[in-house]
Length: 328
Image (tube, rainbow, N blue to C red; front, side, top):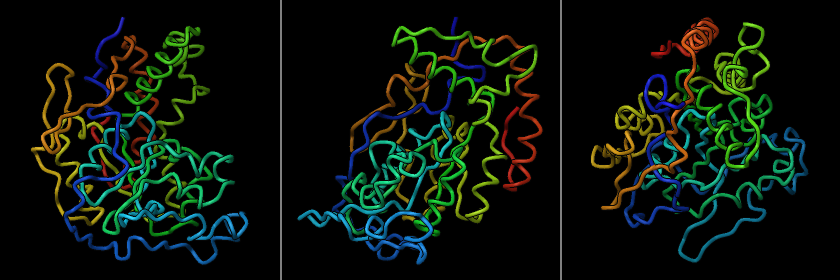
């Protein structure tokens, strides 16, 4: 039996499954403070050597494709690094409302998949949308946050990149993680384990379950802070983004130093779906039906075990980032 999540529908909910490769309302000239020469590519001087790739694969101009209408593919200056099932799809769709943002459609997995990384920066750039000079390109790959090798690689590409990290209650994130796998296996007519047997083993929290590791934010954040200052990483409260998206998006605008554009008229509450959807230029859209799925019912005793398991790591995370979240 399923119900809409222990604390309501899971974040990662509102908005559509389609992200335009470039904004069509781009006739407007929008100043973007702090992002001068957005078309220029800034690479760390030591990039060719430290990335361990041939210099030809790291050239800023190698493979560049310009469009006659004045757009060009740019390496991202904003990367949504995670976390999986934290609300990254909702975040990038909401961010794409801004005319200064050009959002990549798909998760690129450049820095975490060796088969992609070995293709070099020209290939990475070719996966980006065509953007105008006054736009900033953004891509999202939620797996970046929990990959040990990714922070160093991103830093070597561009130490000044802006990082967005959306987090939610760790226990709720684990339940959403399981739910996604559950439905995927169900659709493929594959066997699946009941959630109780996945979460608990021999009466204790199953430390071998990968979804638990993804919710240990303190451990992963430490790795990112070895390469980036905290000021370069903006943490979006995924639980708040779903309950009341506008305040969180205004914080994102300030972090990115873009002109304030996103406003209350861009959001409306869909009573049927039970979460906020987007409105832009008279058009309304919501996330795909795969978002906001009901979680499996979990015995209260197991939920309590999970909350207890995450309590200490959560406290360490709060101290690390100098901020608290309303997590159990």
